[in-house]
Length: 211
Image 1: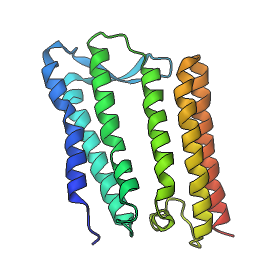
Image 2 (image 1 turned 45 degrees about the vertical axis):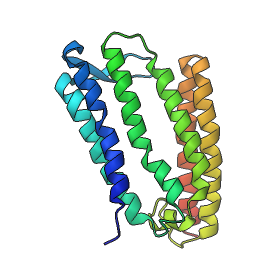
Image 3 (image 1 turned 30 degrees about the vertical axis):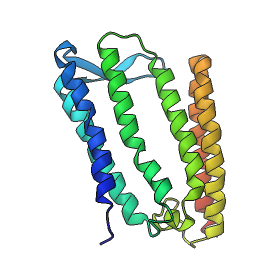
């Protein structure tokens, strides 16, 4: 069985649970039903009960974080070479958890926040960071983890795809942030373009690797 980085797993999982402290501080002031999901138009369309949000949401994120950490460590055959980049990736879920938990509480307490702008900024920053560190991960990490199901283990193909993806993430990350300066339609267009880009890269590598 491959070694799991327990120190990283425990620290990042603990950070995912820390927002519960904030929830407990404002527990009596929070409404019984809390919006936890919004449409691109800032209108809430998903709710949790107060206990489910305060305690359940962080626990769900911890479960997701544990899963991602284990899969990442199992897939990584060069932990020392990929250490910095993988460490950055492992902090994505904890950061999102803390930021969105606090924002959700702020909105539940009656603060008028533009959730679209917050989400677009957070995602934009994460895309830029991920794109910056992606080229620092050895190609065999992606091939062994079967991210693209590379059948013939074409290292050159994977390196090319990762380089294009990295530039793409940085570019779309910047566009995500800039989109908050414009109408909601711009944010929607950028989001759709990002999804299309990712699907195109996936299909390109998938098809090329089977020739």
